[in-house]
Image 1: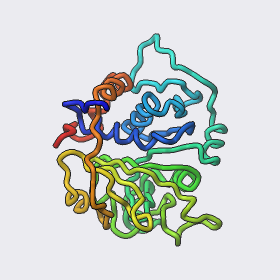
Image 2 (image 1 turned 60 degrees about the horizontal axis):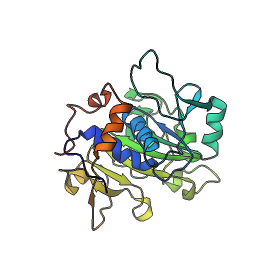
Image 3 (image 1 turned 180 degrees about the vertical axis):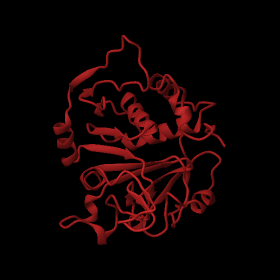
Length: 266
């Protein structure tokens, strides 16, 4: 059994926790939206799930994940095969993809919002990206969530201001689909790890990051979280994982992803 590292950042803890979302996926296309999710998927590919498929975000499938940031002039990425948009969508529609995304809002059903905040749909207070690929992705393949700031503005009471993706809400399911077609996996936040395996797909607390309490999680969530009798501490990074993360992120871009780059032990 590996020995936990003595020192690590919260970002590194979240990368290692996020990697676990991809542990049992086998040969599926892993898509991490944002730096920490991307590093999480890359860490999974470099350690316990070498069958994961990773693209260069342009046109190729890689046998080794690319490091992030500027690369040396002599860097040659390890292309395995061409992976254009048509093949991306083949994976999406056949459930051979797992994305880790960062919604602006998440509600009690696991529905997510990246489109608009406040006001009406026709005239929101804040206009964001639009729904983009969320509707099709959420019903076609597995999704996990990454939340860098766990609070009630993200985990909202009621429904999201604009429902951009499918969750465990029977009233909003498209025709011909059931809750069995929805596949929401882990939720990685700066406080904890959660999933949707509580009673009737209630959001469930899986583990607490060091120094975080159950009360911290519930007070920062706009709806009830299912709390099991025993809640583990999030597994801490080991030295080998930190070494690989350094290779994947040689410029330490991860240090800028959380305000103040806090330590993993609080």
